[in-house]
Amino acid sequence: MAQRAALATTIMGATAWGLYLLASCVKYPSFVWLGISLILVGACISQGVMFIFFDSDLCSDTNCSLSTSSKCGIAACVFWGLSSIMTCGVFKDAHDRSSSNRNDEEDNDEGGDQEAINN
Image (cartoon, rainbow, N blue to C red; front, side):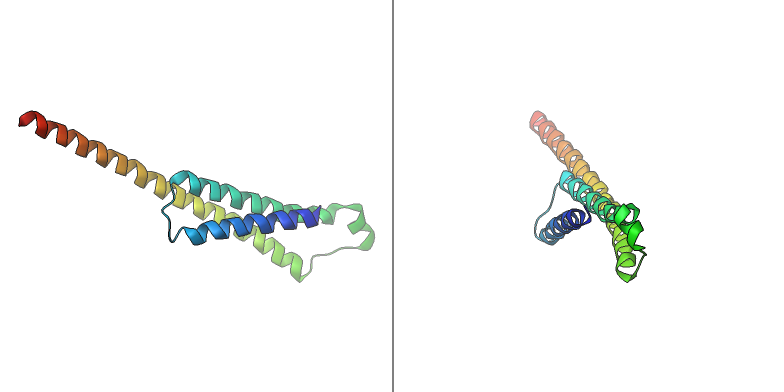
């Protein structure tokens, strides 16, 4: 279970990283930023699922404890969550920009129609 969760976290993280990398070249619509945020939530959850192993019978038999790598995993889970929250902010900015651009285009269209009527 923990190995599958680690693989899922790696795949989701690599996907988010790739999309962030492409964001410097491509202007994403707001729904893409929402999708990236959801990917990061999934990475946060799958990173946290790895700690279910500490509640298993195998771990209770061998006296498992949190070591350095476990603490790094907890920090990674926190950072995945923070990245998701910050990406939601980018989603909101992109959504606000797209709706203001639509309003500006509608205002320009109405102005052009009024000029045609006046002439």
